[in-house]
Image 1 (spheres, rainbow, N blue to C red):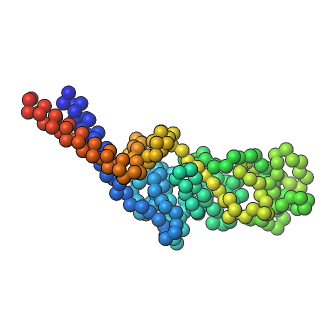
Image 2 (tube, helix red, strand yellow):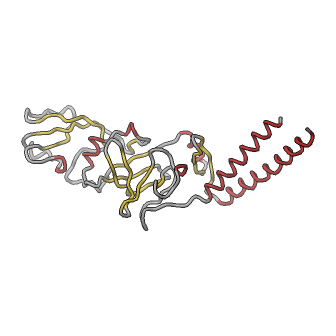
Image 3 (cartoon, rainbow, N blue to C red):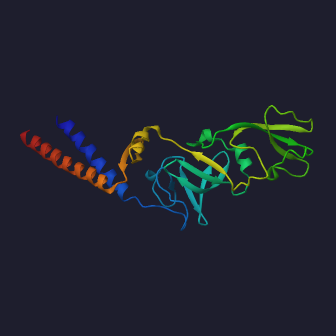
Amino acid sequence: MGASLFSLLFFCITLSRVEAFEANRPPAKCSDGAVDIRFPFRVKSQQPQHCGRHGFELDCRKNTTMIHFPSYGDLVVTSISYDTKRVSLLDPRNCVHEVFLNLNLSLTPFNNYFVLKNYTYLNCSSTLSSHSSEIPCLSGEGNHVYTVEPSSPFPDSCTPIKTVSIPFPYSPYLSDNTFGLQLTWDFPECNDCEGGGGQCIFQGEKPWCFYKSQKKSHAITEGIHKLLYNLLHMFLSLMQQN
C-alpha cells in the first residue's frame, strides 16, 4: 500500500509541476508582427526542447520565421493556425513547384492541407502550344518545364520528370504568394482534449491536457494541491504506523 501511495503522490507532483510549467511557458516570436510560436512548434534558439515536438523546430533568421525540411531545405513560415492545425509556407526562392517536386512529407510529421491530384512534370527541349504555360523558375534556355495531366499526350521533345500528387498545377495567374504550401498536422491522442476546449502538450511521449480558461485551470490546480495534501497526510500516517 505504501508503494501505491508513493506512486500516486509522485504522479500528482509531476502533474502539478507540468501545470505550473504550462502556465509560465514564455511565448516566442521572431519579430513584432510575426507568427505566434507555441506547442507543438518551438524556436530552437529561444525555447527548450520540451516546449515542442520533434519535427516542429523553427529558426529565426533576420526576423523571419523558418522551418527546415531534410528533403528540401528551408521554407518561410507565414502563418500558423492552431485551431485548424494549418501552417502556411513560402519558398524563399519563390518556386513552390520545386518544393512540390522534391519535398518528401513522409519524413515529417506533416500532411498536405489541401486535397491532392496527380500531375506529371515534363521537361521539353522546345516550347509547347500557347495553351500550355511553362514554369519559369524551373525552366531555362533549352529546357521548358510544364505540369500536365498524367494521361495527356506529349511530343517526343518532352521527357517526364516525375508524377507527383500536388494541390494545384502551374498557372501564370497564381503567384507563389497566392497559396504557397499549406500543411497540417494531427495528434490523435489529443483530439478529445482539444475537442473539449483544452490544450494538449507532451511530457516526453505522454500527452497532458490543460484548459485555456484561467478559472478552470485554477480549479484543476487547486484540486491537485488538495489531493497532494491528503495523500501526504495519509503517507505520513502510514509511515508512523510502521
